[in-house]
Length: 232
Image (tube, rainbow, N blue to C red; front, side, top):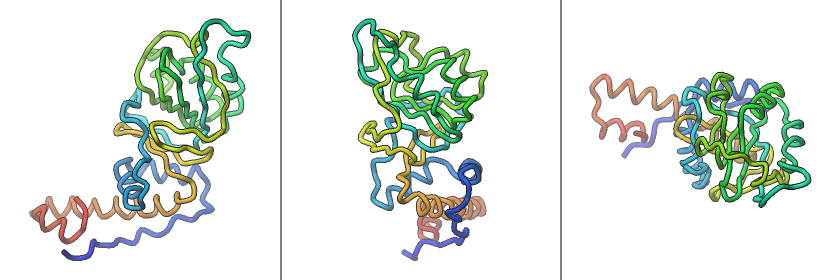
């Protein structure tokens, strides 16, 4: 087999503002390409559970992880929802509210939380749990990913314990500031220490995929295409 073709797409300047980086990822990449690179680098457990899906498949989420821990509660509390409002009120532009839920007894996101996060210019919400108010979230055209809709309220069932701390979701370790990228095929987390290499290599892979697609449309067999380009 010949060596996989290498395409020089130019390296990403580490000093690029996040907004420019996010625009590049949104326009040129998809989660499959990034996930393949993570596999190549030995980071084989970076996709969150497959059950976490976008409310609107046309929207992607790209931003910096702001992890949240949600704990189970059983009945009324002196402070319903725990530190939920504090977590929402310190969201920064480009943050992804990424919540690890407990026993999944209720929703962990809704219409008004979406409105607050949008006003704070957060990048999206990724919930390892349920959301509610689907018909009121969708018109806001803001990315929310969850395990599905379930209207049961969190007030007497769950509370935010802490936020902007490391968490683990489905075996994926997430640190504050890690890159979160989700589309209709799933949500993955890119550790900040390898982010530049991952995105650079994913851009090269995406460019090679374009060449493979063109070669196949011009009559090249899949066997020959894989032998020449090393991907399929």
